[in-house]
Amino acid sequence: MKNIKSKVLSFAIVLFLLLSFGSLNTSIAQAVEAQPVCTLEQISGRTIVDLTPYNGLRSDSDEAAATGGPFATVLVAGTYDVTLQSYDNHTEKNQIQPNEQWYLILKDIGDSTIATTSAISDLPDDIDNLTEIVDTNFVLTSSVTSATTYHDAYPDSTSANSIRPVCAAFDLVLPPTATIEAVKIICPTEDLLPNWGAGGEDITSDTASAFLEANPTCYTEDWTFEWAPDSTVNPGNQTETGGEDWTAFTSSATVPAGALIWVREQFNSDYISFSGDTTEPRDEDVSAEFYCSNDVLNYDNYDFIDPVEADQTYYCVGFNAPIEQPTTNPQCSDDVDNDGDELIDSADPGCHSDGNASDTESYVPSDNDETDEDDDGGGGGGGGSGSHTRCSDKKDNDDDGLVDSADPGCHSDGNASNADSYVPSDSDEQNGGQVLGAQTSCGIYVDKYLRRGYKNDAEAVKKVQLFLNDYLKLKLEVDGIYGSKTEEAVRVFQILHKDKILTPWGVTASTGIFYLTTQTEVNNIMCPDLNLQIPSNLINFTASMIN
Image (tube, rainbow, N blue to C red; front, side, top):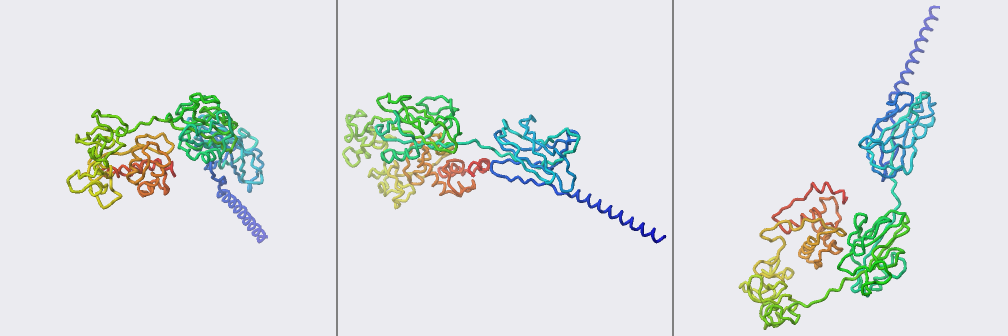
């Protein structure tokens, strides 16, 4: 009997230990339960709100238990598709909880509610995770800086409805757009313009090229155009900029699809003006022309595209010709006694590079100054300013026995053997030519931001063109216009000095933009004493604009 009691006691002890150990294992398993993982992927245009530490929400307690956060985020005003992700461990728990749902409250920096999302659906009893798009075309009227989770069933004491918000995704919905391509064609004379103001075929991708093929003396020109939404009034056919309601572009623009839009060009007074809202030119039967898409009518600078369909490209083309300027001959070939010395043109010493009217070879008919006094009070004329071009006057002006190209003073590098460095326009045989950066005192040469399609400082552009002509041995027109040829020359200069101009930005391709490092390199070449350093602090701040 004693033996039986002992066995029963032993069995009871073993059973107790087994039950206790099983309970302990369950507690441990629950304690190390895996944390939920956000499975929403980062894609372009998406902002993910991480709701770590994934605190659970429940509906049967106080409001604090039904909310979580706030969680920091940044959402700009716009339209979004919203996705929410929920988690609860349904594998090891009794999950008869009918309302495991939550939503987000979005607030601005002042803690004012901007919007509230829809709630995610109840988490089914047979799964642990649920990901669901809860809103499409969800509109934020202003920026959001925080998100707060909130239980959708609160207050509901019939069940805990426990649920753990994991993360949310806001996918920016971009509005549908279309594209405008615009071309400006310049012809040497107005009679070559198409005269489509009374009506013509729609403007297409082939219109400009077909016209240029038929009119080979005409050419495309860099130009600035503008577009504006429907109801924007015409700022004037002969107006340069339309104002704040108009968006400028140089050749291509992305515009919202849908309603009608207006397109115009920025007028340049060096060219023929527009006649206006008329099918016949009003001013001496001449007019500039501008047409877009199917609006090929009238001689005005105000055309529409309607309708603007998504993902379509629409074409515009402008035609013009320069205003004819009266031509006048230079003073040394105009058959007029301009300086009152009773001597005209070739008979006037002021029209000769050596001041000798008997020397037919020194006559300069292109000289526009008949006076026979140069800048330092000496005799003899020649040159646009009345000063001698002493490096091409066939005279030994500095008494060194050397004349013109044989004189080192007429070479930019001081080497009379280098034909490429000869500067025939140099007015001083003694100064060793005009060497970049050789000034006795100098300063900043150019400090302006310049680029193609930008409203540039014309004088700064001229300085850059002069520099490029001298440094790269080019023949750019010094007109103050930052066009395609000037941009290409800047690109060449940037490649030649890539270690100092491109490498600091972290790029290898030239940009054609005359900015920080390009400015610095040009200024150091023009004035080595400056020894300007690369403005790395500004580069770090603005590099994202290029990269």
